Length: 212
Image (cartoon, rainbow, N blue to C red; front, top):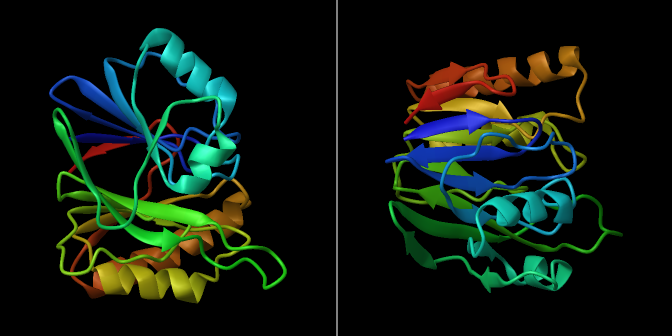
């Protein structure tokens, strides 16, 4: 399975010529040259993880593509046909097997309501937690997309998340709010955490890809 990182939190996964899109949001340039999109996963409702413009472009090219997300996404994107998923749910969209974890967004501040959020495990290999530190308990993750910068993120907590997942390989995502210096500092901390479990950290920039 081929995983490509785009700006901020957007990812595509390609398997057997079919594409899964995750979190096409407001900090991400329009996605071009997508091939045979079979599903879209939106981890939560914040605009840096989905926009109507992105959905309209994808659905215009691939009509009827199913969208999966938690209840908050279904309410925020009321004009779209969103299939609501909860932690523990599984979905099979050929050739992808999706399993969802977590349920709640990480706390930003006690004055800001906590919203729905789901992490997604794809084909028992690739895991992305959305805006959370939800661990896919009992799973040996081959490739982890680990958030590295956010208003809710403390790098020590992000390191603990990577230590808990102990992936074979990891890369940083959710990074457009950081300067280059800040991003590289965060990557260095996540690299250390990944290596403690014997894993390898990849420094992927927008447009870079790797295989699970």
